[in-house]
Length: 388
Image (cartoon, rainbow, N blue to C red; front, top):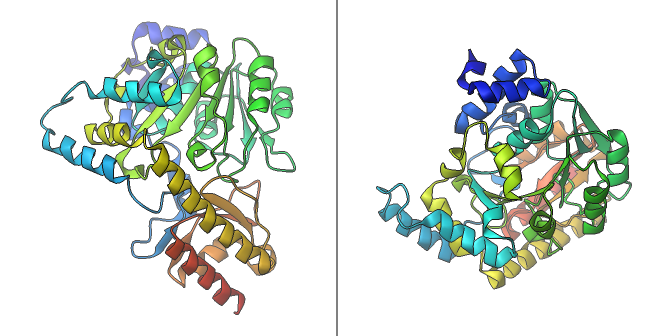
């Protein structure tokens, strides 16, 4: 039985928090399955977005329009030459030291992951229970809430404010006794920011034994203050980062968390440190080389912003509402032009693959900001669709 793959003391701990035998079995599947379960929840999303259309303009999945910086690619190539070694030269520690220097976070607060899916699943298991639920915004990135639904953990999805920020006061009111509060800023799919002051307010006003997770997957596109300082100074805040977006490493699978070591003790008690050492050495080397490149990061951000704003202005001129974004994506409201699914099909007729919709914004599609050429093709396709 799946639950029997967990140690007896772990099963006892989960049972003590109110998880029944079936729920413990599902937890064993999520965590014990390692990378096999890292994509938990994605099949439903894939049904909306569809498989990648090779050869098309691909602006559906919030991928960066280009690959890693040259320094990172060179470091990864060097790592390939030492692919016979599990860890050629203390590489995890080198990455952690680089992150600590760049982000100002203590080195013992940093863990690496093969992407963000595992830690997002893991925080629900670690800090929620059948009595202590999860609170997120709606719309937002769904990984944690899909995990909570699958495990039978109470879930509150709180609408964004009128200007598309997380409504932190409403989030707390929705479940004052939740075990976990999740904020994504910039938010996926809206690309909007929640001010750091609001995040601090929630950290200071939530239950003392609850945990606040701040997902900063898109923060390098926004040039905005980070919550990393909260993770460094408190024992109840976890910050998530990824190299999949700005750094162009989506296929290489590298993520980070910043948190007090005591939180890691709770997160890792189910299967030890195994998952954090499943990161490919090519990704570790690439991330270590790319993270300090502040000038190149700023230049890539400026390039994306210019293309995004040009595209938003184009859509405004054609009467198509959008949500102002601080990330490499935006939401477009098609109104009477067609449903999001119909608009996906219309764009594919012009070899342009756009993103999916969210239940909370049923007339909108998410558009990833690609290269200048990608977005020129998108604008041309849009104009042809509008001409009928």
